[in-house]
Length: 421
Image (tube, rainbow, N blue to C red; front, side, top):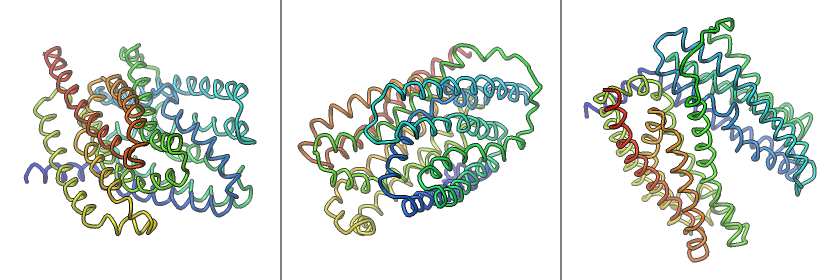
């Protein structure tokens, strides 16, 4: 119990409670913003904007070629404040250039794609510009974490959600779907302008760092690709259900039944976002890392058991809140709940520890294999078991990727310590 108390105490000491509350409120405000857009804009026009936006959302993680990922990992290994600031400036300058190139490629590509819906190309072009302010916003957030200023990091999340709530309401009210697209675009821009001065960065500093080499770029690129594939893993089930069952009702059913389990994945992300810099700074201290792993796994093992017990006892009531007809899919809901405990206990921790030791490409390989298994398995299970088959595949892969991450981390971590010694 002392291990658990210390873990929670350290989390709170690093202002983890601010990160937790900001994340909860951000999700709430985001939901309200989506609901307002649905009420203010016709479904057809809104659907076109959302279709275009979903294309861009998949590309946002590779904005700046993933240099924001490199910033948080390599920045945590630097000792001096001046070095951290110089690394921020390097990422800022190079990342902006890379983001502009990516935007240009998207715009050029849009002219060679035949979109099914009218005005899709227009919104893809407009929304592609989100990539630049989103990248700047992410490196600002990363720099706050490097400064151990998780309180300000939490405020960035909260402020972003408040801006999007009000901008969506005002711009959608006056300019409908075009206003909604503009609201999505200006939100990260306004949030960045509000917080960039709080970093106290000397933009005239030009200290050259030896770490900004090929490995630095490679790490960020693969970390970002891993995030893209992880997002795709959550989307592929819905795409395959629609393709294999040819039943839009089942697509809707699965989308809403999986809504609660997948929404609960924010909890390990909150803890990792709060702790990543700290355990990366101490990555060569085996005793510290082992104690952190024990504490994390104990906390999320207990959390998972409580969550599964509650879900087992009240699954029908939970699904009834969404729609009384969903009670026939209790088994599917429980299978997904069992699946996310694999992310709670293993994947969330060891995936990030792999990134912490500079092996982000391993996460990419694991996600790639998981995606391949997902498609092959669903082609067999969905026609046989319906949406329950999709849930079985997802649950197995959540545990599979987590356990594989565990083995890869310990194998590579031991080699890292031997090399360091």
